[in-house]
Length: 116
Image (cartoon, rainbow, N blue to C red):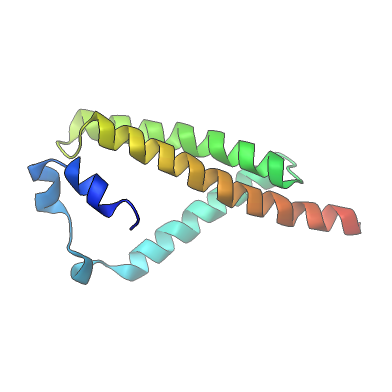
């Protein structure tokens, strides 16, 4: 939501034509999508034996960077939705969010290891 105006400037007319307005968004699907992404990130961090905020942040950032870059490249190749700037900003923001979520999950996982 913070970058809504910026992203709208870098979305093509075709992309805007398929986007739902805020009043028509399907909120349960947004919530489920975010929970599923959180579960993926948590799963990878657990399997990677991450036990610190720093480890979680770096792993979350790399995972988010690679996945969001891949998705954005697929979308750019197959759909007329955004320009290069919009893609780059989406990848950067996804990387930052992945780092923050990874740091929180890594911190939480580290709490359990200290008690043991």
